[in-house]
Image 1 (cartoon, rainbow, N blue to C red):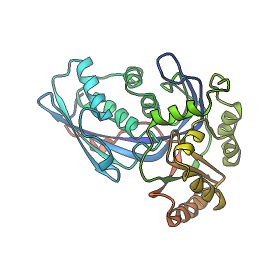
Image 2 (image 1 turned 90 degrees about the vertical axis):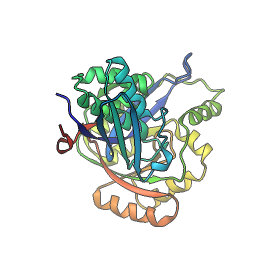
Image 3 (image 1 turned 60 degrees about the vertical axis):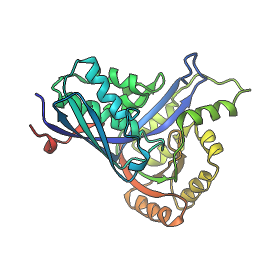
Length: 308
């Protein structure tokens, strides 16, 4: 059944393990990663139009950093659905941003995932999850995971997603840096930093999966890894000070989130997460600080938002 207006809430992602292989002939890098969705959300409201136009408005902390033309990934998601399924209506999208832009947390990808879910309902397409994931994979490597959420293994360039078992709740603190980092630029720097060594095929370390199954934050702390961290730090050396500060304040682990520049910290419990967030906020080392728990589900319709 179609609707007149739908709001979808979609989470940020982090990479608990990110192993990057050598470039493929198509320019992409093969990945083996473990994603986790965390309770830091963007909301996308889709309102039905009688004509075929697609528009986007962006509100919130990072609105100025988001394009509102056809390059916006949410617009591309809506246009893809519209074209592929011969939809005659259009949509007005309103994105309320909380997730940083170009911050290594899938801020654009999660908006695209939310738009797929919203337009599927808005236009009455009735597409099942596997079909949405197929379309999502063409939009971007992280988009399928943002549909799935929870904790999942990513293969290929990250778009081949399989849920993995994870017990308990983990407490994260994020130091959001001034400015973003281009993911292609970080990959380019990664290739520059390791041209003379043989790059092994990517793999997920068994210790990481075991730690997730145990539900132990201490075990997870020693299993976190990110092949892209060295490249991100090469481009933004000052992030090393942020990582060290968090460790000095009691974080169990500190790591660049994805391609950066957001720094993530694992805390032992919610109280320690609050204390760490306060210290980071007062440090002057970052633009802002956010806390979130994980794992959480992927893009979901807010039931109270649906109007007909």
